[in-house]
Amino acid sequence: MAEDIFLTGKFDGRYSAFIETVAGHRAKLHRYCSRMTGSVLDGEDVMQDVLFEAYRKLDQLQDNESLGPWLFRIAHNRCIDFIRKRTVRKVKEAAAAEPDVLPQAELYGPGISRALERLVISLPPKERACVLLKDVFDYSLEEIAALVASSVGGVKAALHRGRAKLAALPNGPAGMSAANNAMLELHALYVDRFNRQDWDGIRQLISDDARLMITNLYAGPAVMNYFTRFELMSYPRKLITARLDGESILVLLGGLAPEMVPTVIVRLESNGNSIHMIRHYTGCPWIFAATEALDPEFAGLTAVH
Image (cartoon, rainbow, N blue to C red; front, top):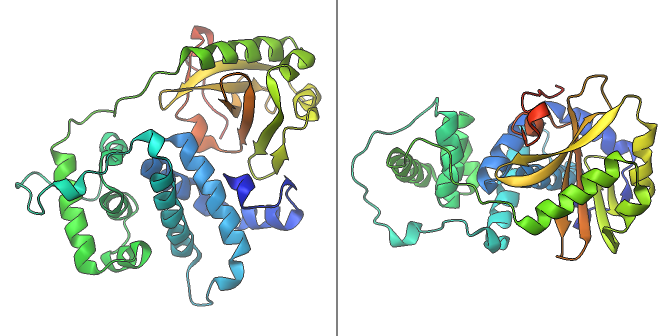
């Protein structure tokens, strides 16, 4: 994703300065992107694309335009692109088959619960965006219309439809798909070799053309010193398996912090035979907070913030 729209390699100091400038917006952007895509990690990947795009288009930000809404407009467009392209996720898009006039139901407005916030993935993209922007992020109807390229009347209609559909849904978490056995076995091998510092063994799991992305730092080939650099961390560390949005992931405890708390999340992508993508997330406490450790010893762990 992000490596496709940005020069590969280590990101320069100007981009790091830009990240610091927008730091106050990142948590809200991630919350929006994760709800639109239906995945905490996909939301982070989309948000990284948003930040790359914003950095490249800074000269297009008008003097009288606020940074927050401008970033949200880019995020909205990126999320819509993601939903359209990632058909393998089988996002439910059934609005056209449903009547425009829905039965009266209890409507959810500002203060929408976290459980219902997760259920917005069941809505078509426009309704999903309007409900999130109004009931979660408290944007005005006029601001939402500008963000989603619609009219105030169109936003009102989308809000009515979306809220009514949410009211008809059970107030509980959306169903999660189980991680496949092949990926679980790959994770077990990776964790075992990592914790034994068997870097040659890990290299055997990585394809020759594998890609690596490190949040706000690097996008490019999976250079092998990525693994051995863990040895240079200041504190003891341990890699464990965990679950996030029903997906099996890896979590590094310690290493960057003296306590055994989550400091890095690793998402592996496999072509069935070997790892072809490693996504390394750090400095993203909004992701850590949603992670569930599979190891009973660390079931009650809390993240660094």
